[in-house]
Image (cartoon, rainbow, N blue to C red; front, side, top):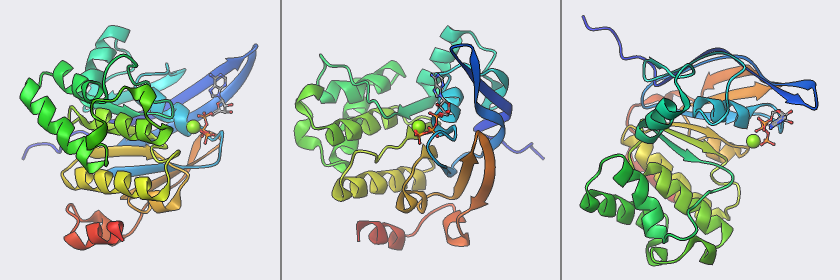
Length: 250
Ligand SMILES: Nc1ncnc2c1ncn2[C@@H]1O[C@H](COP(=O)(O)OP(=O)(O)OP(=O)(O)O)[C@@H](O)[C@H]1O
Ligand SMILES: [Mg+2]
């Protein structure tokens, strides 16, 4: 019998202590989190509970103070910065609160770049970009510069860019934070679609409607996991039915 595949993400007693003018600020205090391939995990908790710090560490954007991070069965926290950057480019898509789009490239190029860097052909990258921007209602903005877009549009472009290279793991920090309800619905529909196709997602959100799409909700308080539960048996099916999508479009 072959062993089960490793989790996509595994943290072991993960700790982050910031130093604030010499005063230690514990932001993440001993988090053990395993996320299996294909799972959609919502991370919730009050402001300051350590959600962003946790997902930044998982993505290698913030150094841990102690503990271990494993990505796809590989120890990641001991990698050099350049090795981690490579792993990230191949395996992780990010959507953060600040979108970091490249200002002097068009929307289309911003979205295609990660796919090209990860080795897609120009044609694959273009088709993926057309699909993602279309799903997000941004097809007609492909030739715009990021500065010509509203904040919520930039946020959706950042999501398209994060999904461009079909990453093993999508990390998102409040991807619907600046969106009105129609745009939120577009984002949630796309997240559900890619999740149905097997995308693993870890998403920070304050919004219970957004969390209700997840398979599992992990709640943080003061840097610790205080609750970790699957949302309901219906969500644990590997594939959603058409009914779920209709419900989202509602
Ligand atoms: N760069 C930093 N330097 C010092 N302290 C920090 C830094 N970043 C975060 N913190 C502190 O770490 C704790 C956790 O912050 P974090 O940003 O992870 O919270 P959060 O759950 O994402 O909050 P929010 O919902 O407001 O985004 C807070 O006490 C915060 O003040
Ligand atoms: Mg945050």
